[in-house]
Length: 265
Image 1 (spheres, rainbow, N blue to C red):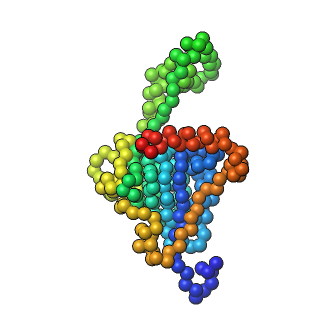
Image 2 (image 1 turned 90 degrees about the horizontal axis):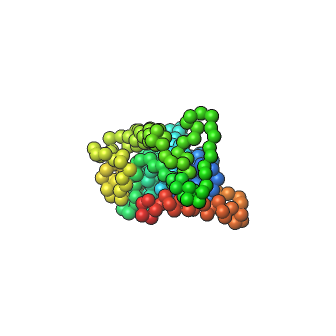
């Protein structure tokens, strides 16, 4: 409340938004999506007149749509409130996690952080031989020649695979456009969009990050030793506080661990 009282000088503050976990729509502890984060992000930009907003990112990626929605919301509010946004990468900001990092004006990382993986992936299983071995017959009836595609219980069709690849390529181009728009001429003149990922120091050399640095010392150096940090993050779902969503949380955790495993984490 001190900032509301005239003649009393208050120390500067920075709003800190924690973005940790898999990026996916729907409920689930640890999931990042625009619906869950909207009130968190809005409050962070509006409460207490912060000098800046810091994003603490630890995400292996996930939904490109939710990544784009969250990043766009951050940019809209940054422009509206004329506040600088700084991102600090912890373990990983890869794929959709790096998309979130591009919402910042500056990106910092630890020397051991993983950044990049600017690509798109779709994975599944083919189970048609398994069900045939047990005498199970798959029956599908549709109205519309393209209604049933990439059914895991039926053999792949080349035309379905080609259609999926076209969609993945289009999403990839959208991702590339986001990175180029936000990082601009900071990017090194080499192909950074193959899906490869790098450690912090090399990410800085490639222009994917601006420097090596951690949240507290970097912001104290910029705003003074008396800077205050206001930390914001999504609340846990009500039922999960009482252990009543264990199955959903377990499924979310298994999905998230699979994403982190792609980066050796």
